[in-house]
Length: 278
Image (cartoon, rainbow, N blue to C red; front, side):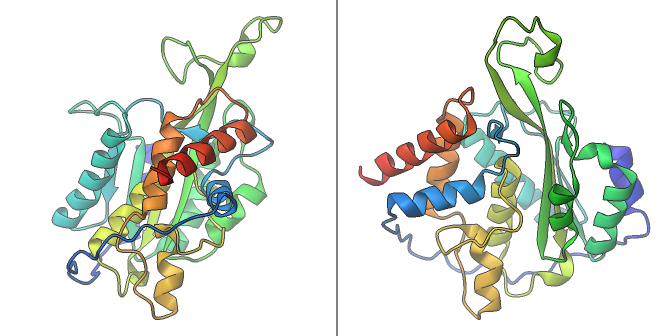
């Protein structure tokens, strides 16, 4: 993984991003969301293919932040790690193997094309093969932040996650499985961050790294993922994770990952709606 990323980064000299200095924290406003709005948001934030289960991390997240100055790279990493900890994920070991890569570069388009060309095996699920064009093409569209995740379908009681293939077991025994994220790559275009503050960028990156949002969805104001669309309209956008974002992540990581995808989405929406009524 690191070798593939290093090859793709070669000749892409990253510069320090320069979002504005952090603004004073805004008052938290919790919108009243209807069940229909929560369903649309949950659908957009949980990409899955061929009706499979929803992906999430099941153990620790080890982040590597590349291409930012030390101070802001550490800020992004600390925010991502703190959010993962709040969701119940195990803290990473002091010397862990990175499975989340946040890459800042002024050559995001070229970097992404090189990564896809040189390392197609990074994308998709090893149980089903590499991702098809429909999964990769949105990644090649120029945008401020883009992301891709790899996942694996594993049997829930495997002793070592990621090394137990459900299809290798006796096919007459139907065992519960879950979809486990194995890698997340977030590519940040340093030339397209004008008007942001670091808290916004860090929360945006943390959400896409810990969930599996659709890259090309039309996100409304209920999520930090509407940030760039709001900025392009001349608006400030969310100051960080919204109440809906936080409720979604909490519900995702508390939901039963052994359910079918549609049932897990229903469970997530139910939990979000119940939390809003408290």
